[in-house]
Length: 401
Image 1 (cartoon, helix red, strand yellow):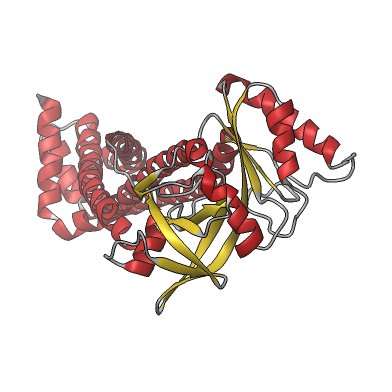
Image 2 (cartoon, rainbow, N blue to C red):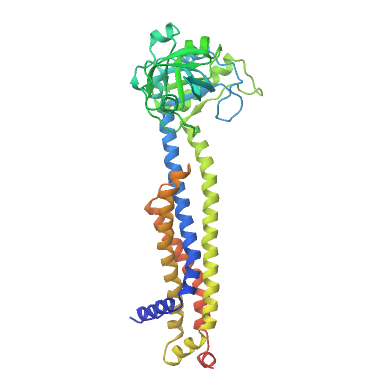
């Protein structure tokens, strides 16, 4: 009962000195809002990584041509061939699909007066199954298309929208590297690629058409492999690496001219990028909370000095040191909790608004509220003790004088 009375006195003092209360409130509000946004960014990044892994496939191994450990495409390396794909298919046990691809990541596509720069992939029919990516409209690439190097293609949703708008592109023609291709279908919407790009910015065509007519190459960009047993991914990736080193006559210290990428590699790469950003933002949010706590402490110390007569009067009518301490600590906690509520509201509003104008993957979650409440209680208590202790130690006679 006494504690409630002391808390009530503290709240009444906050209501009396509104400007001072607002100044103490702002620091906590900003810190909690920043913490809420950072936690939302962490959750959004985690879900984005999970989506990238889903798009890549947990049973998949990608073998792109390229030197070094950077997972992006390397257009300069030309040593990966169709014969390598056949060797992987024949010599590595436990594989369900092997799908070679020829590609170019910057090609101008034209329809009428409209132009767009897209990613071009030459594929075999089993590519659709290997990516679990089928035609939403029209037909998919078939064996006859590959056998006859047919001048047909499928468009990703982004390319279809940019070139045709609201028109149905099926049956119409596009111009790709001066080669006319009939649009056979439109692929299902896919979203972000494993490396964070737009997976729907794709034109896919028969691999023979791509290599002989459009890209004019005799090498592959990558080989996609699907395991019959995902538990053996590590073993199969090692077997593919040994086989290609043997076929390409690579002996250490010479660097591999290919990469072997699994879902684990994609997850590690994506988590590393987002983890560093989240850590930096979390540190900044923590600093904002600490600064808010310092501001709160300083203003309360000033408040103690200004309210010396009030403290002396309370002591004179019977309030103990514990009562004064509880009153000022209650003020600190009340300001912190109110700042927490307003900060969570502001942070939630930012989480709902920012994704509309920025690419930030913000997902508001209730654990953010719990963390914000815990951080606020710690800050309010830690930075409220010093002013409360100073107020409690004031000598009542000196205070009244």
